[in-house]
Image: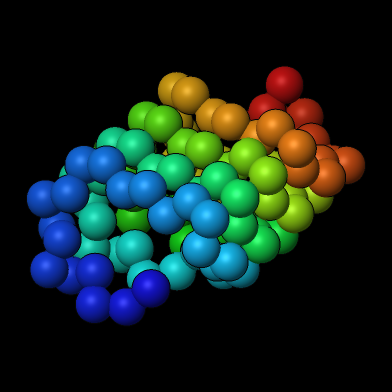
Length: 94
């Protein structure tokens, strides 16, 4: 995902069903409040630290095994993770 710097005011982004394997290139999306990455190939939660206004995050139907990486987006109020392979949840998320 490149050239996202032209979308700085974007509040909602749906990238579901795109065979995305790595979350990257979102550094300029500082206004983003809702991100849908459902049905991709994501195995690791990363690349979200600049999304300080993110409230809704959908990572359903990916290949995620751990919730590591979510601690950088404490603003998230709604998180969807159905149909993943989560085998590790750090105590800080419980």
